[in-house]
Length: 257
Ligand SMILES: [Zn+2]
Picture 1: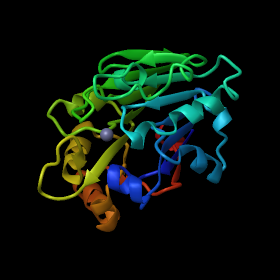
Picture 2: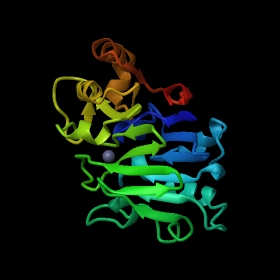
Picture 3: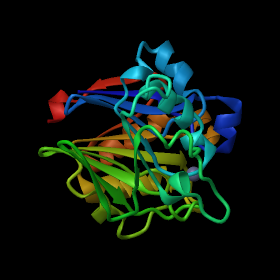
Picture 4: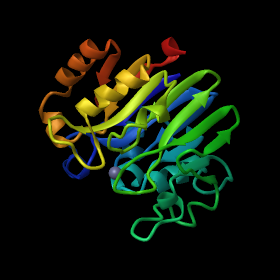
């Protein structure tokens, strides 16, 4: 099983500037399936750049209706459905992504929803795809329907916070994660609305105790201020190996099974 980051930038300014790419990440070879999570701008291009075939995607997960998370979802659906010629694949998204809310979305057109299986995922709900169970995790973010993903395959669990600020029950949502992936936008003292800071991620890691933690979706300031120094300190202080993802980073997850 392989995890690969097609982009590790997050937030408006990292996205506009492409200081880091914004293609989300792929999990390949989980229950013989390939999953693309949060395909922001560049997801299609970066797939090809890193030798990943977008036609071989089985599942597309979209956490919410902000461009750095959904932008390339439609074109990846076209790839997954072999140019919209086949009823295949599965798209799991927040309410805003699939149906739209007053202000946001829908981020995937009716046309693009016509071929794959479509599931709306709300926090606390579960969606099954053969042997995979995807449970929606709670968030506190600008898109009120934003949902994280707890992806379970047998006893193995990858948990992804999506965009959220820290709140006391957040750890309960990600308990049991072997691999914890957090969207961390900033370091520093001042709490930031709707997003995790490095200190928040450290707290979450202490509470969840995953086998490995990875931070991605880094904002411009964090990218400039050495994210690796932050993860070094988090690793030392929590005892949990913590990595700041870089564009293209590939990890073999078999060692965490
Ligand atoms: Zn967002």
